[in-house]
Image (cartoon, rainbow, N blue to C red; front, side, top):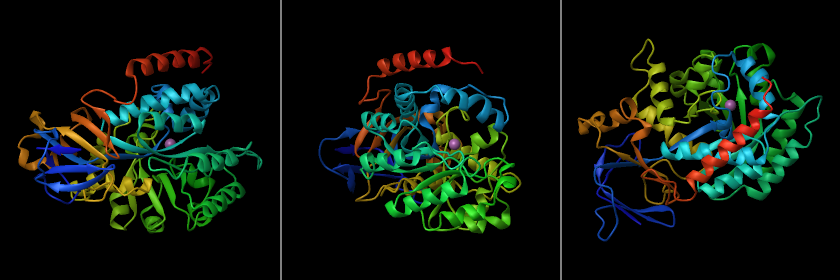
Amino acid sequence: MILKNALILENSTSEVKKADLRIESGRISEIGNIEGEGVDLSGKLIMPAFYNTHTHAAMTIMRGVSDDDPFDVWLFKKVLPIEDRLDGKKIYYGTILAMMEMASKGIAGFVDMYFFLDDVARAVKDFGMRALITRGLVDENGEDNGRLKENLNFAKKWGGKRLIKAGFGPHAPYSCSKEYLKRIADVARAENLPVHIHLYEASWEREKYDYREILKIFDGVKLIVAHAVQFKEDEIKDLAKENIFVSHNPTSNLKLGNGIAKVSKMLEKGVNVSLGTDGAASNNSLDIWHEMRLAALLQKKGDPESMKIHQALKMATEAGAKVLGINAGRIEIGMEADLVVIDLNKPHYMPIERLKSHIVHSGMSSDVFATMVAGKWVYYDGDFPNIDKEEVIKEFEKEYKLLMQGDGT
Ligand code: NI
């Protein structure tokens, strides 16, 4: 496939230029002036796609369920009782709907933590997106009802593929015992798979455990840390490790009243920081474009120099690809063709010379014309080539109604 006549932004520090792209076997194989028939993308910009590094995709079925509650009420009183009534079908359609939203907003892949993993993986496969899928793990009195084993079996069956990868998802240090976290770390180490955990999201977590102990348990394991809001300035250095990846979720952190993570300090200290939306029950949209601008603006509080355009762009693209463990996030020969095509025919992209600034500070997800994953379109001009949009919406609404019939909250 040849993509012709578009402007391209190769990475967060390069300048916008005019070039065609050739894609072969899902990878970028040529950049420049390419002869031959191709897809005409004049008036558009092609850049590396976005990645959502922390979400619970199927929670789209709970969007708006608890908008004005504190974190503990949101989780224990509203979300958990509904989650008890979920089943594979609800999770399948909830995940497909999440991917429709993400793909239409330029996202090529996501890191998930949920359950009914076979249904999540089936949805991802049907849609054609990328995902690093982890099972939410909790234990009570040392008993996890087979969850870790289920997570491991899933990893063996579905993981290690080009589009689907697997990891382990201990929910949080307040919902898992230390012994259980150690067991999970041992299995992750033996299988060489990543671990995805909520850490220091709410302020009360600081009284429940010491983050140092948790990082020590997972020493040497690829650890995806969601939120990290409550880290103090002098503690940030402990996150600056090759195996640790912080997923910054600014909207969810604000909406649940948890605060603002010290992201510019993290970047200054060399921490790997990418962006996540969290689930639709706490955001409520799955829009990395929005997270990118919010992240930039929040860090500028008191110091406008603290978050540069290239840093915000990198968190949304290249840093996210690293979390998913894929060779993507930049337009370079040999890299996976995960791309977003943006329609520039809008007043907020003028003057066109300052395009990089506009992507971060005046562009929006509704400008996305197409999203490509490993060389294949998953969203193109309003359509999702791999699924029946009407059918998904009909089934999603049916499952939502069934779910809410038993709602006593
Ligand atoms: Ni979360």
